[in-house]
Image 1 (cartoon, rainbow, N blue to C red):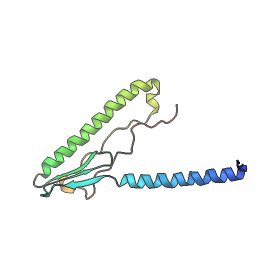
Image 2 (image 1 turned 180 degrees about the vertical axis):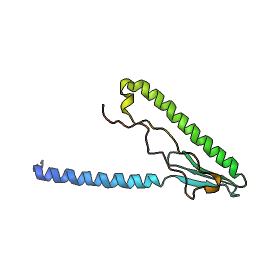
Image 3 (image 1 turned 60 degrees about the vertical axis):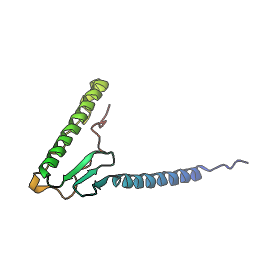
Image 4 (image 1 turned 90 degrees about the vertical axis):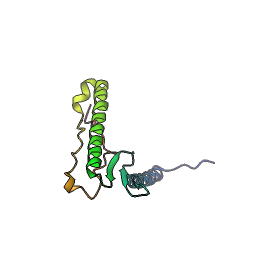
Length: 135
């Protein structure tokens, strides 16, 4: 025995399912944003903070602030170079459409050592260097 839905019933069911998917997606995003972690060695000499995708966000080495700052700066430079390499490959694939894309891959410079932020640098894990404007 098959039950037939009226168009209004079908639409109400569809809207309810869509609203549930939107709630689930929002919850997933909130959970994902908090999925990064900070880990400290047992002796508390090294602390590392990573984004949900594993990207290094912050590094503290007890007694070696300058070394930690240099490592973070190199990490930012390496991430930017890697993003540029991917972008170059992507431009070869997109060909004539490459100029239609927002392809800013810059990473902010580290703060001066005396002005170290209380919070880790901005997490770029969910930002993309490719934005399709219009093709």
